[in-house]
Image (cartoon, helix red, strand yellow):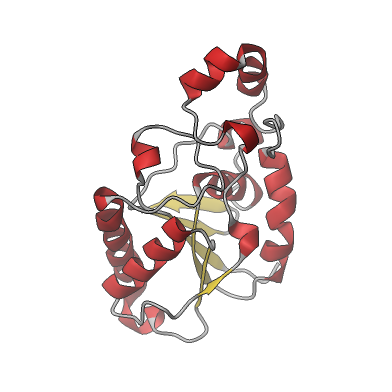
Amino acid sequence: MPLDRLFFIRHGETDWNAQRRLQGQQDIGLNARGLHQAGVAGRKLLGILGLERIRDPQLAYIASPLVRARRTMELARTAMQLDPSGYTTDPLLMELSFGTWEGKTWPEVQADQPQAAAWREGDKWNFVPPDGESYAMLGERIAPWLNALDGDCVVVSHGGVARVLMAVLGGLATNRAAMADIWQGRVIVFENGRFTWV
């Protein structure tokens, strides 16, 4: 894979994040805190790379097409003194689908489907929610996108995608990656088979 470094930003907070609802592929916008986090992440990335590298036309900027990721990218680029519209989207970067569980909190899922919830807790990486997808399936979905990358890139996507990248690019065991906390307003740098939070 010709990828050198991948700079990953999880989208800013939404009301559903704050309520701890499973968002999946529902198109939920940023709340006020999420708008702030997007700018913070952009300023952190500017601090990592510097203005000259940030403006390099060879540095790709790619976002999930969901509005929370696109808005985060636009605000981050504004904070980096860039044209907010100067990025592409890729549907392969959409969040893990939670199927019929989307919109529910985890306690609601546990109450409604205790056996399925227990199965997921036992093997979070491979469990497929009803009409949804597993982390393993998400890894298969984003593999063509990863294989097509050429050079450094900045990505704004989702927690599930970050967990898959931690396993695929960062060398984290899949059972640990599936449980990893993915913070908003920070940057994950993937490089040389490792990852670092900034």
